[in-house]
Length: 464
Image (tube, rainbow, N blue to C red; front, side, top):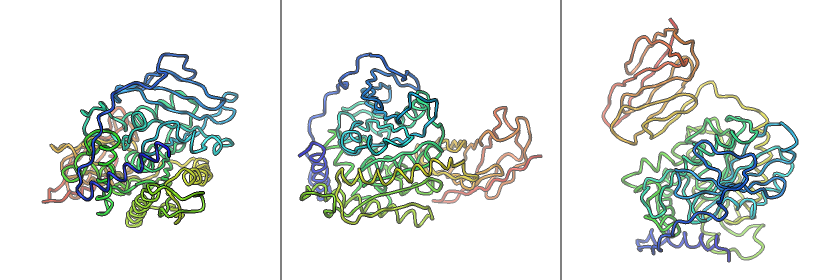
């Protein structure tokens, strides 16, 4: 029995213990150690930048690079595997990128060693980037900057590493098609949650997202909320050796943090993203050559419910997606390998379309300051986390939904120095504004305060 399968069994067993009120066993924290092979070597085409230091770069065959990167955002170096398309070295062509995420107790090598990604992409003009999403193949990061940075594992700003550093660093070092139209993200199991969470929190970065036996709802549906807090807590405690809610905080007291990272709660942000999901009930299927392990059955049953709950949220919001429910199938590599192969043709068609930026966008976030689609919103509030949103945002105006005043800065759309008349419905702000030298407009907008409810301020812009 593989270590990864044992990890799945352990996480599920501890989750059951949490659900029935049994105190889970907490192993001794792992001693921090850097990955093997981190001494400086020739680093090929890869250079330091974006806060990342290239400790080593090993070329494996014609297409594959195995990298070790250091960053102040993580307590120790992380592995990243890069798979280049055939003929990359012989042309000046630029290529789209798929960021491909592993699951619980996995690592950067998983998709190469177990998922047959090399064979699946052999004939495709596609760069595949596969990063570590946890330390030492432990329970994993849950693809977020941890609320608790003081655990025995140390610094754990995984979203900042993956999104703020690795994504632009790849564009800096390889001949990519930079920008959203040439970038996708996908993952299995916990990585399926990560792919959809990253896509929902950063919709201007990814044109497509895929979840293979993922958990895209851990907080919206009441059953998903119960199971999600149990499973996340079990993995953090039983596999990572840290306190159960280090990643997102307490599920009750910090419920808004869970919601602010939960794809089902952020489904509106995905309205312009190509969404594809694969799932099964956990019952043995055609790819199970022998009686499956109980853990592979149970975990797939849980992720099946989570996937269905996400579909319910998307239906309610009118957000389009494609769901493949195998019905019979388990939480094992043969199914994830098949799902990846089924995803790739559709992904290549989407990438070939070179989709442009939507004419009108919206975005919802719990962060005090956020930037998406070129818009920037800074809420003038005391609370660290609170919902704010833009709706129907384009050159002519927007709707701000917030519980406090906010400073809204537009994209670089306007002629510097030009003056604009501003009209407000449901709030107030400056009646006239001048375009900044950067080509942006900046407005301080206040809504009519209502008890227990965010205000909606409709703002219209007209050049004077």
